Length: 63
Image (cartoon, rainbow, N blue to C red; front, side, top):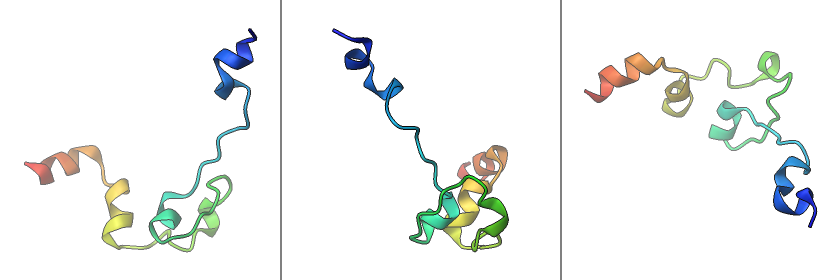
């Protein structure tokens, strides 16, 4: 038995991360080198504002 059989995710392809704001609007744009070109970087919709809020502010909203 190989270690590759035991822990296959360590030897697979690298994980690809996508821009969360673009995902909110139905686009799959890779996050790497995308920040300057993001079409939704200034979007103020509820989906885009949510992930960017500081954690303390969100805690106040919940209370």
